[in-house]
Length: 119
Image (cartoon, rainbow, N blue to C red; front, side, top):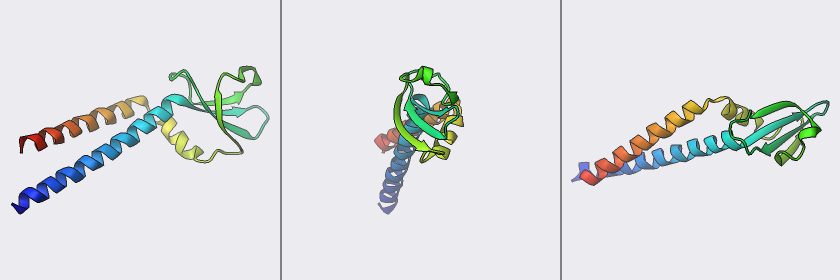
């Protein structure tokens, strides 16, 4: 009886871990698809904006005022944005890695659900 309880506890903890990582991967994917860093010419300001084309680059250097209004600006800061290094890491990770992690996590999630229903 104690083995069954510990197995259920392990199954529950593993399911929580998979759900947490799944949420993290989904949030990173949404950040990569819809956020952009704009760095203007001749200015030390850095802008964080929302882009409406998911296939567009995530970092635009030499940002012109001509395309002003094309992006919804969320944050403006001098020299560097808060969390810019983390955003750059997320932006540099290829879409294929996020899709692979999503697929793997979903397979694991359904495997644990299937194992739980067969007990």
